[in-house]
Length: 277
Image (cartoon, rainbow, N blue to C red; front, top):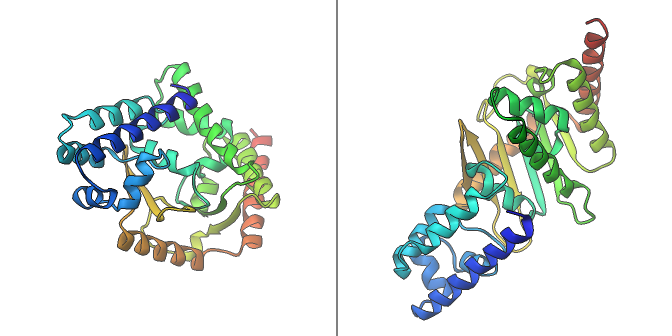
């Protein structure tokens, strides 16, 4: 489904939600309270600014007694997404964010990946995948990075563990170019990069990626991933704890200039390795 068609479908979802809510005699705040989100969220669903998670759509069906229509629409739109179902909602929000903070323990963040590196990462998880699937997945990931080129691009802060600089995804040539790409984005002031070095030792939420997103007219969110699963969190108390975790990671990381020097050194190590093989 094309992006324009998907947006039109979400707009239909929102319009239908508003029609059925009003027909049931509910205010946005009233419905929100019954499905455990704020009235402001219901308004954003109705305007197709924000997309509900599947469990919220299911609760809306229960309250409005709509025989599963919102659950079915939500599933259809998620299944037609270019992204894994557990990441689809986070990907939708990414394009609306005013600030994105990533922590990457082992793999470069998606917004910073080159096509070559992304292909290596996709194939590592899907070694027998059809070429069409690989190409589409890589293209979707690279297309996401276009938001960093927009005039209204979000402020992007990325903390990479040193392991993400050292694991040779795709081989030394691919890694050298990937690290050069990250340095280039940082030098162009499109992203602020820090590295959490091995020497920092143990760190909060060891081995787990973390993403924080802030928005102009909506509460912030946190997103984490497990094995083929993702959690998009918007409970204020949980998000506050995630922000505190990110602050600890930031405090333990190298300065931006020292981080870029380490990334450049790692890229040079990969280039030397490539030249001797």
